[in-house]
Image (tube, rainbow, N blue to C red):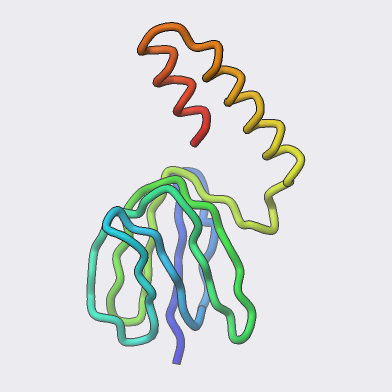
Length: 120
C-alpha cells in the first residue's frame, strides 16, 4: 500500500507521485506518515521533508506552508520547495555566506530582521 504525495508551490508542482512514507517537519514537531494515517491538517515548518520510495530515501527543502493528510493522500502547500538532488552545495554555501555577512553588517532592527530572513 502507498500514499499519493503532492507538493505544490504558488508557481509549480514540485512532486506528484506515490510514496511509501514521509517524515514531515510541522510547527509542533516531526510527524511520520504511513498508509492509513489518521486525517490531519497542520502547518508545515521550514525544514526538510524526507520521502521514502521503496528502499530509497529522498529529501526536499520546504519553506513553510500547510499540509492536509487523509485517505492515503498528502497535499503539501508551501511557499517554495526544492528537491535535495537539485540543490547545488557550492551555490548554497555562497548564499549562506552572503546572508551571514549581511547579518553582521546589519544596523538597526529592520536590517537585522531582513538579514535573518536571508538566512532562511
